[in-house]
Length: 245
Image 1 (spheres, rainbow, N blue to C red):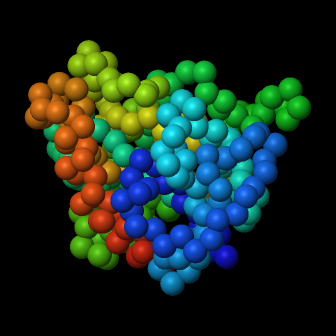
Image 2 (cartoon, rainbow, N blue to C red):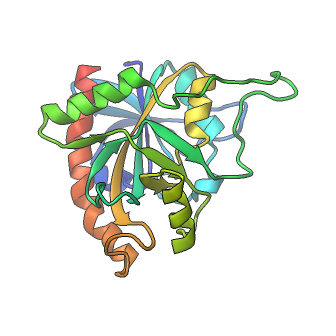
């Protein structure tokens, strides 16, 4: 089994992953979002977790991020790729585009965000660069190899959800320097860092954030429009990426 793992979000059903096995796993932090999925891709087998559950039943703030990361790490994953759906804030990053963000700002609250605590001691993880630079480059190179344009860099603003944001909130994120907005990069990235896992995200934009671009239209229609085609391209990227890794 490869040391590469995937955490796949809202686009799981449209990604077309070849799931060859499902196995139960137990963690000290409760149940993971899904059973561990063994996925055949790029001529290899890798482990994956469905971030929101295979039937998409978990809202972003309900995801057991600690259990997901711990389960993958316990079964040998040392390099983890998150597939994340985001909204576009920066006018140069449009719906349908792919990005490999290099920074994030965490606007979430109340999520279990560390493996430390009373029993494990306090953990002050170094987090100046929240995403692994080498893994980010490999994702971008894999995209280029299959003819996909991928934005290298950009700040991911992580909001609480499950509701979408107001125009004023998106204006604030823009002032803070966010190019995109999503709901699941934290505490996922920080927990991966505590475990010593290389972690990076492939982000697919499926809508304009509130007050940006053509956001006056039906946002759910935008998401439906861009998700299926976008996930086809993400699937091609993952095939190449896993082959390279």
